[in-house]
Length: 279
Image (tube, rainbow, N blue to C red; front, side, top):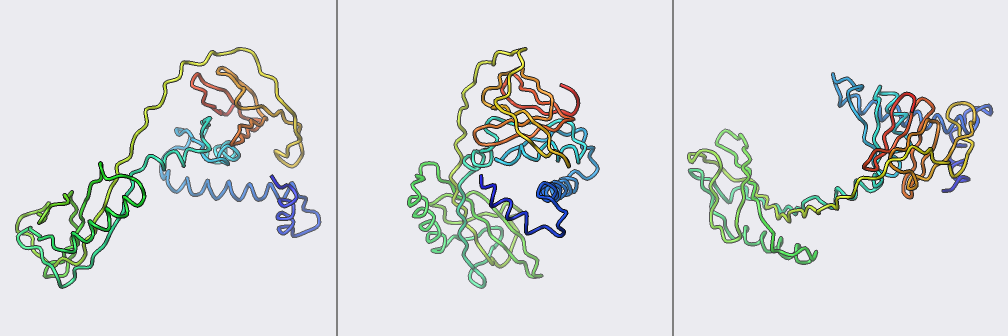
């Protein structure tokens, strides 16, 4: 992207004249890899990493996936043609939720499990509808949930949450009908449900036994020394492709590094699979 700027940034890390730019770059990558590995290890707890498969997403996921998997002891890594936009795609399928709060301390009580919804409830509903319409989301599928915090006479706080309608006058707590206490806070959630798209089912790709030719070759520092490395265009690799690292696969929106001790193959669905060992 901007090689000169990258070199300038690396220069700021140099501590002795003998530290080369490739050495400094490798140090940055190792620090990132170790930080990610520590975070993942803390989540795996007693699990055996060798039993797991690593999924890559984001534009930079394929750059570090194999190195990270090697550090963790994971033997298989999946890459995806649209992996660079996984996060954006997932976010687009989430529910839209607006939350509105109203402090009711000293103003309202839950009596025998019932709580009257007053003018504050209508006020929150009006705010929610205006916001949803202002965002051009439409109100046809708009639904509401109300959460209330109730403190009993001992000061112990309980939180209740339930669905509500726009014309509702009162709220019954999900617990016992004998629940009593002071209502401290009310939160109205205005929810627009997500729309799950129907993904097109693609016909199986035709497998090939022909080894594709690289589009280029580049000098790459996989360790301390540079090594001529083949570069492949990801979109041109058909199902059935099996390649032995080291190699680099360049897609339109991401890049995948496959070290020497790993192989890379394309399955029938077009997914890339990196595995430790020979192709």
